[in-house]
Length: 99
Figure (cartoon, rainbow, N blue to C red):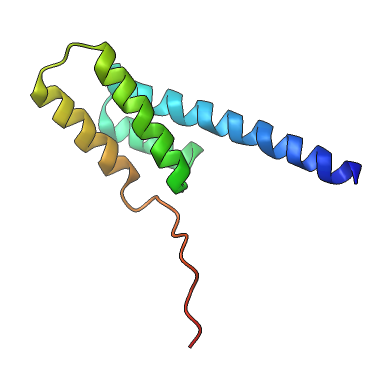
């Protein structure tokens, strides 16, 4: 039973590290990094993301944009870059159909 508890704690720690990595990667966009550089870092460190992680990133994005007084064009550019990085990298949670 202790193995189950230890595995759960380790899984939580790994998820926390992963969330911090995601946060740092995407903060690069808001701090002026090139979208291609951020995408390469995302691909190298993260790869695929879950729907839950996308939701957390969206909350982070909203929070950052609310804190900064950015023109609408800049908000749209950052949102577009954010989505272009995630495109094709969201895990498909649907179960394959039995044939």
